[in-house]
Length: 210
Image (cartoon, rainbow, N blue to C red; front, side, top):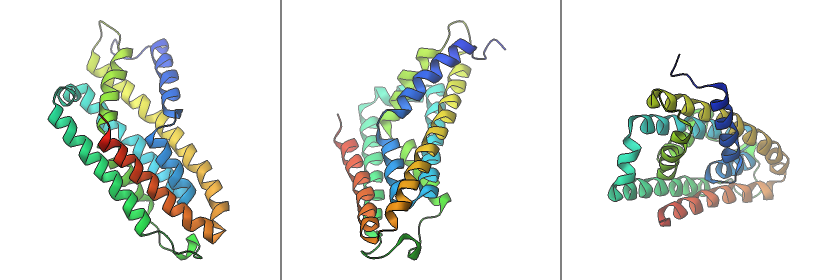
């Protein structure tokens, strides 16, 4: 029981975590753009994948592997390149498979929820900036005198849960807007390309970031 988070400790952490998750960033921007372009199911599925990708960062932080990655410039650069290229690839695929002008969303096959969930999971898991964020953020809420590894795991689980709820909400509301826009074929076609372009730009930004 000594390793469990206290209520004040968890409350302070959740306030900070929610504010950070709501702040404009790559994850919620991708969920928003995908929800608008492809509907609620797509936005929610991708958002839940992004949220559960935080579990891998929690495990890395608890095991201390994040510190090793942060200390190795080569490992960080390789992971940054891999993450950026993956986002660029997702964006290029979205642009290539965008619906033709004049075609509605219902006339085209879309990625299933499981596939979008997997894409969100990988997109978050290979982002080295999130790895370093967890390494820097979680330990700030670890109380001295109790098992730090167990506390980090609990904090990571709490972060993942609140991120899942927020990203699902973003996907849901973005989908409502998207459904209205997709009834206008010309706008729907541009939304597909815009979503793909956002993924490409985020990938290039990650690759170029110092």
